[in-house]
Image (cartoon, rainbow, N blue to C red):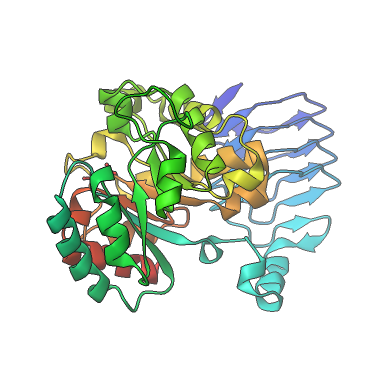
Length: 369
Ligand code: PGA
């Protein structure tokens, strides 16, 4: 059930599973109801009371929960993303005070409560560019420029022919090497393909999977992306799985449906422990190589939605630990604003990763966060 732009003044003993409330205002208490898997978005919940509800897997995004109270509710797997929480209580405990206590009393590495605890990853996707001497020259230039970077994981995903050169050029540096695809079978009669084991054996760490250019020009589907992701994980690689909507899908207002479908299918059958080894790149197809970047708010909105979807599937703790990148015409000029967003943990960069100076500027922007 979808509720948009409404003022709600009575909810009690309802069975409202998979309820979606957007840009609305809740001026009442919700009691003894089932709200399992429901999503509240940009909704005013200030002062509302939630009492004895099943709120299992509920997602709250960009909501105002100021002064709201939750009592005796099942909140297993619930996710709160970019919400206003001051004065909110859960079973009488002030949530903001509790978060401050945790932040002050536990080491950052031990908690997955916010962006600061996730690994920012800036990955270059070179696509079909650079011969071996050109690859070596670019990496030689880059490694000098980023040698002092510690808080950002730097990855160069390069064509298969450049992997050996790239691995040799970056040995002992803070630059990790990735491939741009891999096949899902271990070996066999698949002319022209490369297996995950072949990459892992070389020392490759990352692999881009499900890039929209693979989906568009090489007929890859969510089913094959899912198989490739499983094969990459089995070989010990870290998959960077790309998802994103077409311009037409955005215009039809189905971005969230498209993204949720891709996330559910691409990660189908993948356990939480394996998911934690994956990176997700949100790449709106209309922004790739077009010079049209999503605004920072658009990127944040979809990255937050991806995290909320993961929270529903895997629980909030796992969702909070996953690095979600933005990709699509990210460059030296717009990177800082994009990576400053709460749910944008880095970028997958095409064109701008082919210039050492521009790529370095993006990396340095991610260091600031
Ligand atoms: P772009 O490519 O930065 O050139 O738009 C991004 C990507 O395809 O990963």
